[in-house]
Each structure stands twice: as structure tokens, then as C-alpha cells.
Length: 112
Ligand SMILES: [Ca+2]
Image (tube, rainbow, N blue to C red; front, top):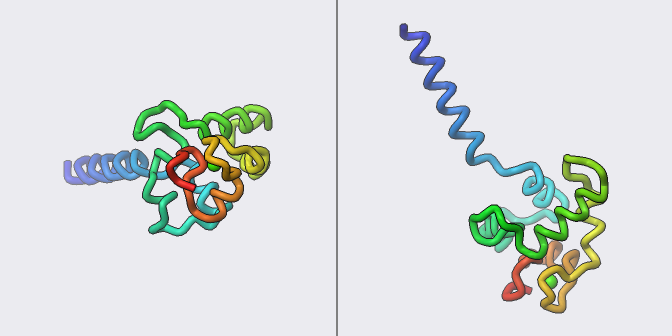
């Protein structure tokens, strides 16, 4: 009985942990652009690619999704990021690659 309870508690802990884990795309973004943990990109959370905390993608997220589909892979690849670095997804006059490197939000025109 005790063992069953312990296993259930571990299961709950794992489920809770995975629910808050960053998606692979986010961790690859952070790795590629050396996004600082206290910077605007980290603070944006899901809004880096989505509209707020919704599933709807912002312009950068939409471009990244298109680029990812073009690679033919279901997993994020450096090629997908690279493919959209020359675009200005949010039309603020600053290319995605520049925004990603300097820590601003490539899907939010108020951040450049
Ligand atoms: Ca931009």
C-alpha cells in the first residue's frame, strides 16, 4: 500500500514537471541564440512564438512553423531557425536574426 502511494506520488510529480517543461523549440532557441535567463525572451515565455499564452502563433511563430514544415522534419532543426533569420516577421524594421541575437522579441513589433 505504501509503495503504491509512493509510486502514485512520483507519477504526479513527473506529470506536473513535464507540464511545465519548456518545449524543445524553446530550449533550442535559447541554446542557439544564447538567450539570457533573465532577458526579455525568457520573460516572454510562450509569447516568444505565440500570442500571449494561447496556441495561436504570432508572426515569428508562424514563420518558424512554415520553415519547420519546409525542412520536412517534425523536430526543430537549426535550419528552420536559420531560414527565417533574414525575415522581419513582426515588420518592425529589424530582422529576426538580429532580434534573436540581441535579445528582443522577433514576433512583437513593440520590442526591437
Ligand atoms: Ca522584427
